[in-house]
Image (tube, rainbow, N blue to C red; front, side, top):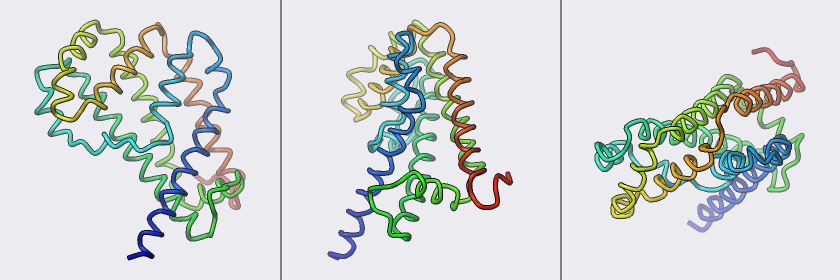
Length: 217
């Protein structure tokens, strides 16, 4: 029992370290965009909310429950946004778990280096899954931007505020509201999305190309 607890604690410690490592890399990669006044709120949401190094417990909320509580009370496309966010976090969490298991197997501690990260990253041989993660991130971003242009979304969020608290889905509604506010001031999302997709794709391809055997996908 003690051994199991120790393993669990070590796993969580390494996972947190991995997520912080990845978050810091993202913030370095997009420092120019984050420093641009027009993208400040959007950057904060994308890098500190959508990709924050924390446990998104709301992803475990069943969509059946959400539909039951929110159906007819909010703009229907908001449920689509929630579905996609949960899918993104489930995928990211799965990929993080696989990396942590590799870290443990290879005796790598929380002081993860970039070389160690790249080696573990490519050893999982899930190039296509990583590209899907990038495209899903872009899809989620575009959905939120679309929602921010609908006046009915703001009304819906206010309408379900009390209901959200009563049914334990306040975190989800707060998340949607943060996205709504962050994207509302951006008229055209194409530059941000194209930059994100291009840089992330180049980053992943560079990692694979730099490993033994090169980029074969």
